[in-house]
Amino acid sequence: MEKQISITKQTRRNFLNLIDSLSVEQLNIIPAGFNNNIAWNFGHIVVTQQLLCYTLAGAVPKIDQSLIDKYRKGTKPESFIDSNEIELLKKLSIPLIDELEKDIETNMFDNYKPYPTSYGVELSSIEDAVNFFPVHEAMHFGVALTIKKLV
Image 1 (cartoon, rainbow, N blue to C red):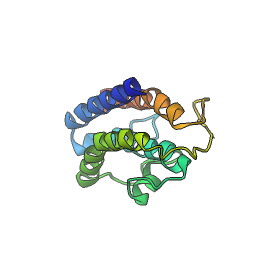
Image 2 (image 1 turned 90 degrees about the horizontal axis):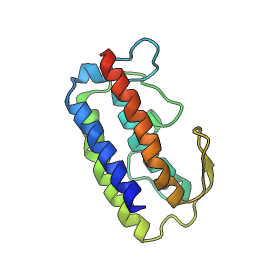
Image 3 (image 1 turned 120 degrees about the vertical axis):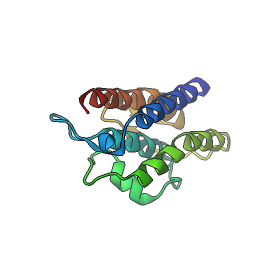
């Protein structure tokens, strides 16, 4: 899982660089034909990691429930995502992966509940979830790169 975690961190660094290259207004633009924006895609990857690891293992996520409710699967931006919230997501992005690495070592994910993703992959363990991150996060980073061309 070490390589997948490394790839996940790099994707998040790439996302952070993208975010830092745009204004808050640009991060919030929802182009025609899209139902989300760059800020939402970033929040979504941060939240999804917590849900796929902690929630499915019966553990308490390390982020506030309000963030989970706002960025989980099936949501879309309902209001302007301000600079304070974007900064919070940025500050959480890499440290949450660092914490995950430590938590994996403690075997806190032994009660993992299988989950069929909308991508068509079933996750049955923390190893499956960590292996899935590079695909999921790269997909959302690709969407964000596409949106950047339109803003």
